[in-house]
Image (spheres, rainbow, N blue to C red):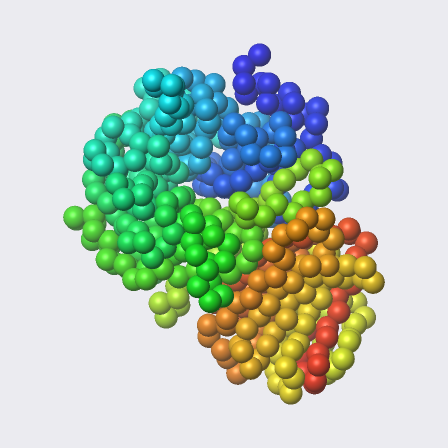
Length: 483
């Protein structure tokens, strides 16, 4: 039995029922997932692949899981797309991207091989190609299409991964994460006429030591009148209320000269302030929207219950827009088609502990606009009952929001609190929480900042409670999300 059939057979026998998983966030049928891969539109469907180890709830030899959607909300699981079964990828089919081409749906990914040379293990990462019809994929006979030896001599062969491809003005382009001679990360650029023959072009962007070490999972695209580079740096040190996860996602804005392939960019900005957000990837829809999705988990904090046979999920897909030089994120508009049972409270006084009729649940869209008040702390408790709670707390004097999942039911000694600064204080504070059983995604001031986090509280804890140590006046809206 080949590796793809073996994986599909195992998944079919062991897949987790849908009621045990999030309602609309992408998860694997069973096993471990991490980075989103191949996020693309092909034959009028949205395709999402992901790093997948089906055989356990821990990271292992990487496969490409696969699912499709017509609206970014309802996803259908498909057979595994790639498995580590060739000489050029026998130690893993690592992250990559996809594109619709005349030859079919093209997947470009990192093939990992390990060699024992003079008693020492060496790792080599190269870029590989596969074509398919949207369900079944065949690896290209000429793989790898980019060998690490094509890089300048001082660049790392071991850390050369996560290709993101696009087509522009008659040529294909690819950016990949790499490590330069001093050990710091960089993004390298390649060009090809046909996806099969690639030429090294330049270093598109590089780390001067400010942003961690290795840069993973690059994405590069035009938005409005600027270009955006997204990277996931490793080993960052906390600075104030930033970079506390160690592994983060940053974006850089700038001007790109297509003639000489030079990118003139500004300093990096955190893409999400939450405890669980990494490896973001985007696609451009046929209707012109730039949509982003990310792995909603942290590498170093795994809080899922031991008995749970799936591990990891994706964020809700988000529409990106550039407004006054800042990247805004909002849940895809298609989510609105699934909102039911709307409830509105206008100019509602919150003092002490308040529960509002109809404001409860674990799969919902909740908005709260803080109009005015005299208080030091205002908290929204979700997934709440007498035993469990998870909360977001607003401190107007500090202009900060603190997240706390200490009492969410975690059974391990992990960091459970995060605090972020509100970068653009407004006369009123707008908070929108997308809640899906085991996750919360907070969108602040119409998506100027976001905060993503997971928790695995038993589903019977479904109350939502507002707490204020003074008096606050809020507009509150809530709708259930019915999939």
